[in-house]
Image 1 (cartoon, rainbow, N blue to C red):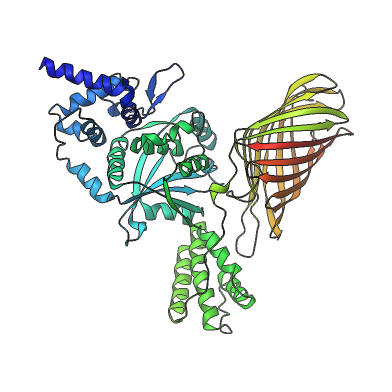
Image 2 (image 1 turned 180 degrees about the horizontal axis):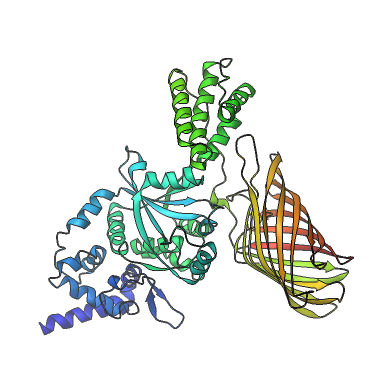
Length: 602
């Protein structure tokens, strides 16, 4: 017995510390979700105690390995059934010789999932949910070919949150790890209904290149982590990062999680997967219901559009003058529109049922198929610029020159290259601006934009979305009466509407409220209301933004007029040249700024 013990310890030592077995060691670390820490030790991102067999297992992979070996040499069948992936690993390494027990629940889990493929899904940003502003990733466990994937299963990692949670608390706890997160498995048709139909988000599907053995191992590991929880953080251990760790457990040589030591954004994790040689088989695109309806409307002729708008908005059946082919187009798209309108709350259930039934009944009498072609040439999110941005600028303010450096960790601005992003959507997080004024020989923190969100969604004949903007920033400002400069906290936001006057150009208007707080401004604080009007033109590599803002307040400091223009030309996906002009007129004095700069995305 003692000899066997010595041999076992020798094997463990070789496994963890011998160079020739380094790959096996990485596999064990990935299986336990161990990540290197700044002080040199390893710690698992999993927080649930039931994931660890050793009392020190969260921070001691060697002890956890030994405890796992001991488990499978014991008679504890119930606990063995919790760790099928560990059993596969230990058996493969020759560290155990026992058989895996019969586990009915686990066997049923495998049978239900029936893995024949694995697909990484990316849904684009959902501007009405703070946790989904950066998009979302999840996995689909594909079933055998020849059957619809709608009956397959999706794997999602997310925070467990009360749906009635206060928005401010939601943001605070999400940033500080106040929520627990975990993996859930549910039918794929539920996922399609939620993201594609209810939230109207496009879905991109990246089919991964895995062997059947690797797929089975993925399911075994999913069974293990599916019974655990971790602290959820919006920008680190989030929906995307935890999926990277799960994929690393299947093939540790991918080292996907290692790409995100500071923060993980869904779009960046998607790119990381696509960059691994041979990992992605193919890519498919599933447009949202709203996109499908817009695409169908764009292909209708004038007569079809007129009849279609009367039908969906006024419930007037003015289709008798149409050919059967034209009727097929109108009725097919109208049926989809009624589904959209009901989900949006624009149709009551009784009205939805009545209109849908009448439309389907009329459609079944027409043999001709619709002539709609699917959306083509849609820019892939893999073509999008990288999320972080560093900008170097040379500028002049009232004749005084300055140099400016700005760093934005995430994510996308209105004048950034739009390929792969929602057009008209802006999400800037922690944009930090530092300036050096040459004449004053002074280095200052000019701006710190905590969060800036803008959604410019144009009205059209079909849809009437509300545009909005919200910003919370700390800015270095000047009191023109005293010439004193200081820092001011700004919070402003509002709603409005926008229109697409050309395919390339949106015009927009907002009605906003404003709040300022700063020790050096009159009365320390100010409240105001105002309006913003402007335009945004996007010609692919060249973008142009212009806007004018008028603010009215009881505090003369906040009474002001602001003008801003930006011109940006992208000469690569991640590099652009930018020119900017700003005018601020308040307290009877105007301040003009001009800047030229170069932007680097990384």
